[in-house]
Image 1 (spheres, rainbow, N blue to C red):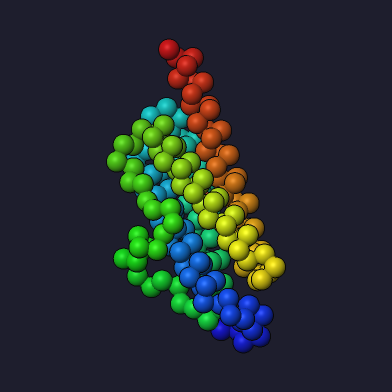
Image 2 (cartoon, rainbow, N blue to C red):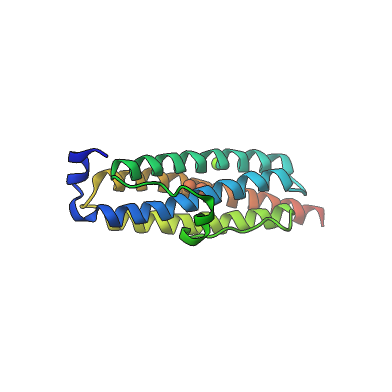
Length: 166
Ligand code: FE
Ligand code: FE
Ligand code: MG
């Protein structure tokens, strides 16, 4: 824990750690949802979808790392067991039980839309109170916005492809 660094957030530290740990759980679940989705996905445009899912998985893992570093700076402990991920997560986990590309894309788009809401709320709650966490929320929010658009672009391509075939 950095003492002066923690001092500037004052009485908000515990609340920030709680918010960050919830986001941390979301990131791990998002990472795994993308990672396993890339393994099982099937259907048209599979290769393009796998490439995007794997990139996003890597981004979510990087987000988990960024969030955990901030928790530690604030004197907290990132959740130490996967068992707690489901209790803490804002966005949950959607099992890719149907491997068809359209379904996998839909599930991950829903996840990104939830993530955008989470980081937007974190940004609103921290701006003016904690510049470091608000900057972190901004950086991650930028990625989540990009992720949503990437997946929706693939969804559009898939739609026009299926339409052309019909
Ligand atoms: Fe993320
Ligand atoms: Fe994302
Ligand atoms: Mg992407």
